Image (cartoon, rainbow, N blue to C red; front, side, top):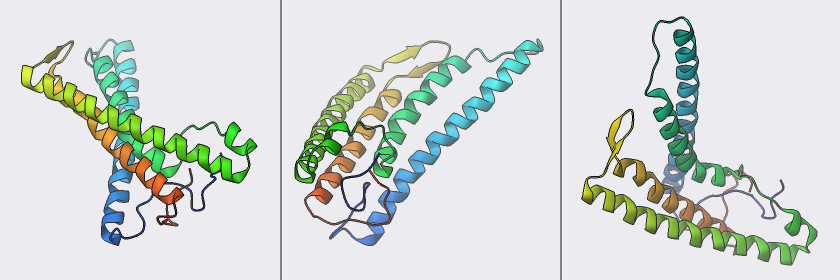
Length: 184
């Protein structure tokens, strides 16, 4: 889908030092790469499990649970990178039908709403993860693990998404753009 903003996707611009911008982009790219690698390893493990199980050798009873966690973490931690790249799913029927001025307003409203939702997600996710840590909550399935590290991904993703939405709003207000970033 097309971007209504020059330069497109997320970036740190303006007065932020170039090294911080580069570190931020590298961190997001690393999260995206990590998510992709985790999904690839999961695909290999599932294939191996099916083959070994059908040969009657062995199966991995923990694999279903691990696959749930991998998909969960990959989704949460890659979301800021996807937003930065402008590779997220978006419905731009309304913005494309409106005059540029109104389309820009709709985009800014959507980014503002995304910022608020991300901050709420970060706040509540952080509180839930902290509560699980304090109580010593444990997940009992095939694997027995503390619950708080699983929940801790929620506030991390929320903060990173909030940063990305704030940067989109900053760009929309003319606060700088980095031409090397992807489209929205």
